[in-house]
Amino acid sequence: MTTKPCTKIVIDAANLIHDDRGIEKFDSEGEQITQMIPERLVSAVEQCQIKGYSVTALLKKLTYKWGLREYKSNNPEYANFAKIVELKERGTLKLIDSKEDDLYIVEYALSENALILTRDWFNDHREQRKDINWDAVDVIRKNRYQFFENKFTCPDIIDISTTDNAFQIIDPLAEIKKLVESQSVQIQNLNQRVHELEERNLTKEIDSMSKQEVERVEKHVKKDSGRSKSADQSANEYVKRSQQNGFKKLRKKAALLKDIERRGLSSNQGPGAVMDSLQQKKIIHVQKDKVTWR
Image (cartoon, rainbow, N blue to C red; front, top):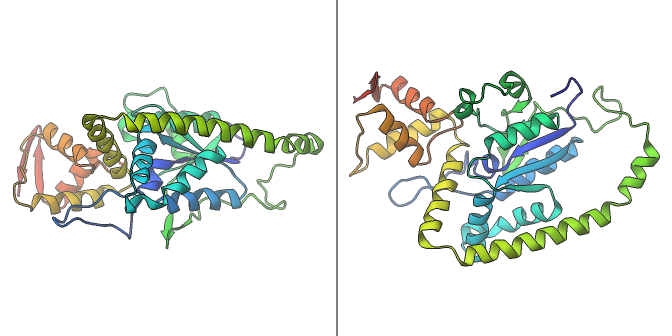
């Protein structure tokens, strides 16, 4: 990261596409349903672009594959996933071929001197990756945003689109810029061709997925969904599930943390923060490795 003002934004696409604050849905047993809300990601991209930023949204290939699979199978809950396909076709959405996307988002943003739009605190990686300048990450990370009728708003992202803004960079190479912009149609055609080839390969992968693979991908999608919630929200959901018949109240700290993660309730601060919230609510008491339910 440099001292130059940020003119780019990297969006944690999974975090925003699963952000269902205010429009949560629950199944017949009261368990929260994992949702994808493409309109929220699209709105975030558009609003950031309106403010003058170059935007790149990064999404795990597994998450995209799951959404595309549900969309192609005519699942009504995924009817708007075509909006995500369009983002990818335009080259705004990039896929990460890895089960973990956090470090890709962090390192790409730092290398591009870009802001990061996410509610994830990246707590899972701070201890293991001390080589990363986490103070710098905390400066560029923007998490104070809301959706009003699925329209994105974030007062912490300043508008750099006007020429009289102090952060506006005056480009002395205007003629070169015009020349580059004249190539945009050709670049767009190339992006579209790459997108078509990727979609063809993904369709083949989806068609050949085994039951075990589908379950594995669904597990990852649920985990991504949990990252869009606060620790307090996830703790409240865990308490609700603990009141259901057949719920096993785990007595070991490690087992409880694993169960929180397995249920897709890790939160944007990690499963440890959810466990701390459960303690603050006096639902459990943790002493060393022992968990006592109250």
